Each structure stands twice: as structure tokens, then as C-alpha cells.
Length: 71
Image 1 (cartoon, rainbow, N blue to C red):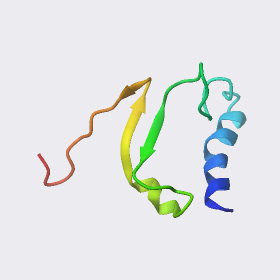
Image 2: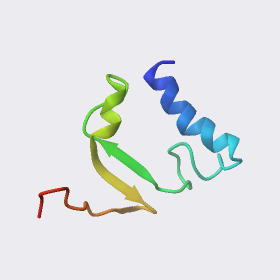
Image 3: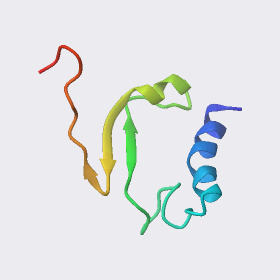
């Protein structure tokens, strides 16, 4: 499975399997605004999924929590 196929399986196909494709699983007007913005493309390297830049939940940016040793 390619990284792109893995992302589709986890998002669109997962939402379809749960019967929720109308409101989640893809980015489109009227759908829930829950997104993860990454620092680098997971299509280049699937490990980039761990490089989170911003999380948006219910249309609002979720503040970052400090990591170990951070403020």
C-alpha cells in the first residue's frame, strides 16, 4: 500500500465504513472541520505523520501542550 492509499484508507474509507462519510473523512464545505496540518508531506515519507504543525478541532486551532522539558 502506498502512503497515499494508506491515508485514504484511514480517512475516507474509514469514514465510509463507519457510515459517516457525509460529515467526516474528506475536506469539503459543510463537513466537520477536524484537521491535522503537517510540517512535511506524508506522501513523501509516511513517518511525516508524526510531524504535526497544527491541529484544528471543530474549526478551532488546538493550542499546543508543552513537551517534556518545555515551558
